[in-house]
Length: 320
Image 1 (spheres, rainbow, N blue to C red):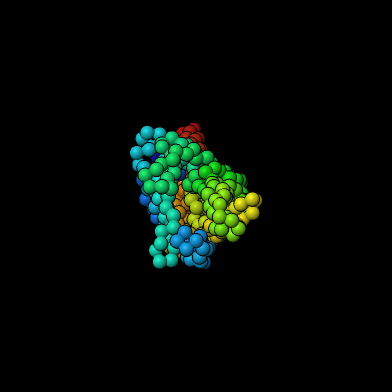
Image 2 (tube, one colour):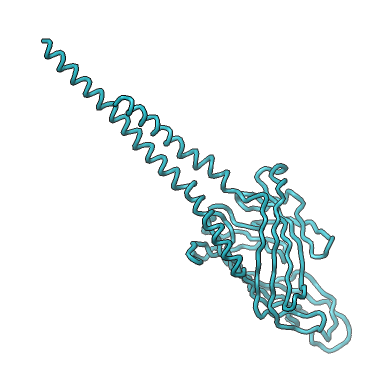
């Protein structure tokens, strides 16, 4: 019984120590964005309106956007705790016509998701031309253990962070997610020199028109990983002159396609469950079980001492 008591006490003490080690040592090493990220994200916008530069008219088409994300695995060695992703984005219309192409390199904290700008962040909309930029807020993902609050979320068109608000918790294909909405009213992001006839006004001279952009962005985020499971961008780009929209450049509702959503749910739903297990369940179970074993061992030890004492008294009485 004495040996059993010591075993229970030792095992209980080990489990009590193991609980905090899992929570404060193992979990932080698991809750990091992968440095060697390789992923493909697909988006689709059905019946979008876009300005066709060949016909100089608005056309209706389906837009298919592909985002290839590649991580620079060398970044953590140069900047501990930081990862760098490069997004190569291309959008085509019906018939495979290329409508836009861009490359954006971003660096951010592997745990919090906050921009770090450590490692040659840039954006390129013209092949071979890289324009350095300063990312702000969350350029790619939300923090691990995302909170129900407002975050600054990066907008690639405006090249700045805009608040995105938590609006509720919902489910998608059985996975619990946080819903965030970002509303950006019309903002100027550039200018174009265009003939008056192009914007429906009389005259032959060229004028400077303003490129305007607005979007309502809805994100569904898996809160334990901070990964965006799906997103919807209800976007409008216009060419304005004298304070009035004169020409629609793009009007589209972009969504992650079904394959992307399905893969995200499978990958990050299970990853979120594993992180929850390591962060909360295992430390608690380990501590409680360890405490039970420790107390059980102490109880057995005292019981044995009590029995031994009684036996000694009985032996003394018999000799008397």
